[in-house]
View 1 (cartoon, rainbow, N blue to C red):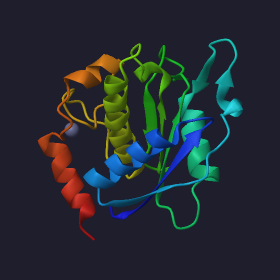
View 2: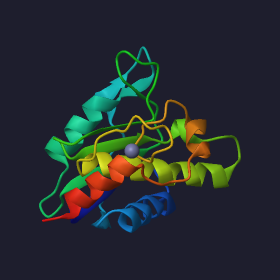
View 3: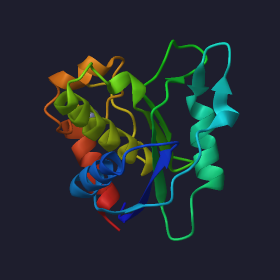
Length: 175
Ligand SMILES: [Zn+2]
């Protein structure tokens, strides 16, 4: 799918990180990426008992309320900890029907290692952008389209797509 991906912050996120996410997605997919005005921290998705944000509630809201005209998909980044009801946490979530994805940055930090953090943000931005434009999550742990269980799973990746995902990308790119 060629199109325009909107990249937005949830709460306060450094502009440089958004630019990195946008540039990485544009480089790997046939997409124009635009950094749109930031969104507030998603209070509506906050679970006070878990002290975490409900990932699928955010994805739904992104797709339903924040996908502007002229944008085909939306990727949001926030310094938040995401969960799904049956899991302790998730690093990201996405839905092809809502054309939206969210990446929680708080699990990606590893002390003061900025380089590692940056690379993890890049890999998760690719995963999120892929989800938002309709690629499926992949079972191959080496593939960019695999949702990692833990942040350090990302460190073992080359950043490439597995063969079936590459095929799907090519198919999606055709009109
Ligand atoms: Zn794959």
